[in-house]
Length: 216
Image 1 (cartoon, rainbow, N blue to C red):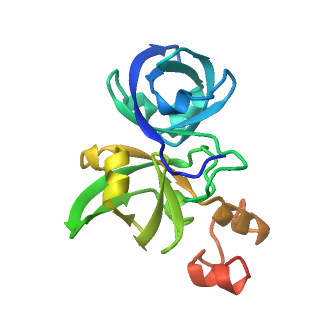
Image 2 (image 1 turned 120 degrees about the horizontal axis):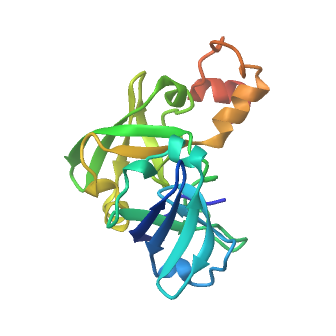
């Protein structure tokens, strides 16, 4: 489990590709402190298990399902990635609960500066957008952010200078793919209200609906 507060950015140093899977070697510093083989590290929001490490790199297996669900296929040697160690009982919960299990990917549509912040618009499939509500939380490449706008095609977040400087988000290009993990509460709400498995929901999942049923 993670918080979405990125600890540092690392660099992909090697990609050993199998038929459908990969092994990544990532250069890092801070996230290696106290880390042991078998520990979890979120790489661009993807929960990966450390299989080996040394003083300045760690390796992680990436299974076929992870390759299908995320943007790791587009990463190359030299790509920068957001890194966060799994939370501990003493970790400050500065973001929101992030599992590291990616729901899918979105595409960056625009960057618009407003004073000291930058508005980022991300286009996503309806299957993902249905779980996103205004003022709710979303993890983009593992970064915990607050949703400021959402419609049937896209959502927007506003990125403050600190988040911009400590992560890779503002260094991306328009059209580039990002990993998305929706707030898990929306999925539980859907399941508990009996929406799971139906072709469509009888009631749209909105902030008002969550309040109505006592989830907020």
